[in-house]
Length: 317
Image 1 (tube, rainbow, N blue to C red):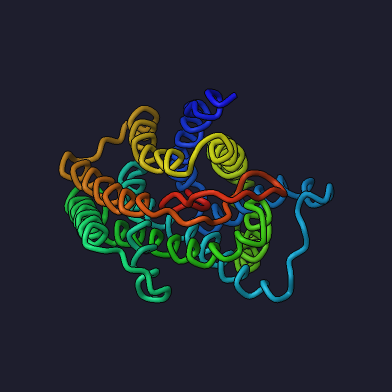
Image 2 (cartoon, rainbow, N blue to C red):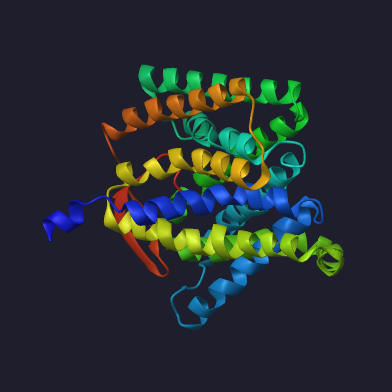
């Protein structure tokens, strides 16, 4: 039994990386027929519908009034703003490049921790942040000078910063609520401002090609619901420091899928910048692993368990 617990759960880890990585390619496929806001609306709607049975079965508890404001802020940043900004950025930036830029999200998470939570990253952490930020800037500049758009790259970086903000908002909530509860209630709040584009989204569904609509459905079913389940299995089966390897594999999966399915290959300098981002984040993660803090992370619908927090843990792409 001890040997089983010690075994690395490669299958759910690989599945999670591929599912999260496929989100970037799915957005690229959907964009010609759907606006960024419509993609966000439909993706979040699919997620809410898939989680409704857990609410009916009592696996999702009630949201306390005292936590409603923070949950709303989490939903508006992590669900609404992040999804819209990422999709808007991918209108002019290929999926693999977008994934490398989003990988810089832990940089912004650490900066927010320094600014508002009194975190002290130390010399190693600061060095890692500097390397990762340099890599992100290299990717952005390279993209702007090549086939993509500098504005698109900066928009994706804004999405990464927004995602980091949602992580900071979600962290205290995970001490009281399961991951499924955070995703469900965050999605409900995130859905509200997007209802304004519902008529346009319905019209886009009616006019869109079937494979583009399938890509939008995949974003909710595969990249959110299925990925949540495989990520929860990963966290249950191993330590969070091992599980965090998934976060480094996501850009690799996105690059491979983008090349295989859409034929997009980023410039070598952009790939080099992406490697700098991952290297910098890895340095900061090693620093954290030396003195892990016990937090509550999602382990499945309606359940919670104490674990060590992986860098940038939370709802991904």
